Amino acid sequence: MAHESQGFGTRAIHAGQRPDPSTGAIMTPIYQTSTYVQSEVGSPTDGYDYARVKNPTREALQGNLASLENGRHAVAYASGLAAIEAIITTELSAGDHLVCGADVYGGVDRMLRYVWDRFGIEFDFVDTTDAEAVQAAVREETRLIHVETPSNPMITVTDIAACAAIARDAGAVLSVDNTFATPFLQRPLDLGADIVMHSTTKFLNGHSDMIGGALVTNSDERADQLRFYQKTTGGVPGPFDCWLVLRGTKTLHLRMPVHCANARRIAGLLDGRDDVERVLYPGLVDHPQHELAGRQMDDFGSMVSFDLGSTERANRFAATTELFQLAESLGGVESLVSVPTSMTHASVPDEKKAEIGLTPGLVRLSVGVETGDDLVQDLERALDAL
Ligand SMILES: *Cc1c(COP(=O)(O)O)cnc(C)c1O
Image (cartoon, rainbow, N blue to C red; front, side, top):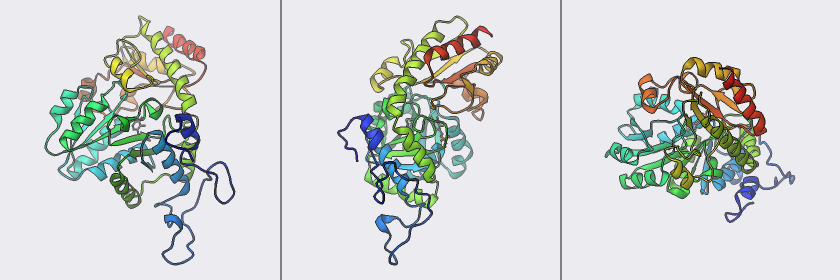
């Protein structure tokens, strides 16, 4: 087993895992079982009584993710949205208020508007890059502040430590969606967040072959509560999906530097072109939160958005690139292109799109780890063809 004092790469490969006790298998087996045989009534081995409650492959993944986020506990879910739902069900009751980042994953916006609104959860969407606006939105009933940084699809950066201080003063909890940065680039718990949330579907898995989510926390009490809700509401991931994320995190520290280097080069290239209206990448010195990103993150990530001025140009561009394949999602080894306004963020109301600056011509790239020269050539060819 790995130790807290070991480096990120060592923990990525070893944390949460040990040779299988029955055979010595170096890889954690996929424990594809629904139940466990007990020798006597009421004496399950080490809490293994039913697989919704506990599964060894899931335990290994949870141990691994907790270590990478410098946290004490992780709880895994069937999807990133199931993880968000778990934050809401464990932290909020009817009448409580949530301050949610305005520029968050489209599915979070949809869940609040169409599901939680019916259950009496109050919420406001706030530009969390502005700490004063976050403070101003806090009310007596505010129990939770949820931010995403870097955000989706406007790639804004929110000051985690500042939001943690606001939450602490308000007696609320700060949850941070760390999907875009990954713990390799940013560790929100170290900056004062109470809960880190992930769609493990993205960089943690890294190979676009499963859907999953996770929460990480340092609080023993919160972890007990999350585990109780996990077994009680049932949104658990299957063991094979857990195994796929575990396989992915072993190379996170190898993939991320290449993702970042390719993205930095591509952001620079786009920034230098007259036919691109604006480029959103925290690594560019004119990004509004460039300095904060430099402080809070170890590198700037691999998500790049830019504006081509119209739906027509954005759609044509996205259909022309070859290496950048047209698809939703992100964080895999392969590069993807999407047009958020009609894809990932189609369910976000038009006036809110206008408010956060999500224009029809916005294109989002998930820059993969292919050879940089080939990615550059693909983008230049598609832009020249417009
Ligand atoms: C994909 C994503 C989610 C939702 O996760 P799923 O695994 O698709 O349910 C939440 N937040 C961010 C930032 C995402 O990219």
